[in-house]
Image (cartoon, rainbow, N blue to C red; front, side):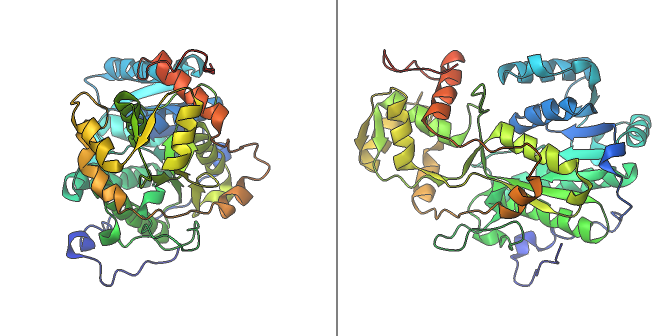
Amino acid sequence: MTAPTYTGIAEEFAADVVLADDITGFEARDPGTVSEVLLTGATGFLGSFLLRDLLARGLTVTCLVRAADPEAGLARLRTTLGGYEVLDGVDLSRVRVVTGDVTRPRLGIGEAEYAELTARIGAVYHSAAKVNFLTLYKWLRKPTVDATHEVLRLARDARATLHHVSTTGIFEPKEHETPRGESDPTGPPESLSLGYTKSKWVAEQLVREAGRRGVPLTIHRPGQVWGDSTTGACQPNDFVWRFIKGSIQAGVYPRRFGLDMNMVPVDYVSAAIVAASRDPRSTGRCFHQVSAGSLDSDRILELVRGAGYEIREVSILKWMKAVSADTGNSMFPLMRLIVDLERFEAAEFSDEETRAFLSGSGVVRPEIDEKLFATYVAYFVRQGTLPAPAAGAALVG
């Protein structure tokens, strides 16, 4: 990993990209010798699928969960896994729950339990994140930046390889440039519009510096994580799905809306991360889990109509007026983001190095087409998130 250039970084971030002196390197373990791993963010969307896929590899998985006690933590896991329809595929007998909090020293784990944990695990999968597009960077520093220091310390103490989940959102969003590859420079943070992506950029700089010091690690940058390609399970608070639901609720859709995102199925993201992490060649490398192209607002409208929803295209101002008239609309709390989205320049991403690395692994990226979109809609209808489309429209699942 090449060293970044910090010259000119805004004062807001300058101190935060400095890695603590006590985080030092150690020799990487052969992934084939690792039988137990730690997973943060297991009660999140991507984390649920990482848990499933890690267990499918025969591993024992210790999950760090915020809860009053391990029993309550396990109950949280069951609820989350059930909601994303993966509970039946998970062997909970190989799941251990440790209660804690990534924002606290030693991850909020008691001294004796921490020592016992670091003696067992051989890898750390860090997918915990506070995803909030409305929050300022300073409010995300603790759960993202400070937490990264604590996760790195745990990896050091356990001599466990760290597999860090970042995001493609840390690239400066400029159009008409060569697609950003795994080795291309990211940031600068002041060019990123969201506090969330700024915090993820800073966290990745800390991880990269740890790698230069000799901490064995991998970095994974998913695009916008969408639903499971088999069941359609997706997170209802995803921005694009809230936009789709809000437009269906209002019965209108904004013409030429500035929405253009790289959407990628969660099961592919999880499978790609796990497959790469189990290969000893991956240490020190960065991977992209992205789709071949992005979905823009015109294509999303085609997919929504193709799924059976009758929706009328109007100007952006008429759409905003219709949404703002209903406080129960899914997009009502997010209307302040609309102006920023209209100015947003979408970046394109390359995953050439990642696909070459995964060649022969059996991990295949599903494309988001009409059939897969209908699978997503069917899931949201089952969950009661979306109304059923017009009679006669085919629902998958």
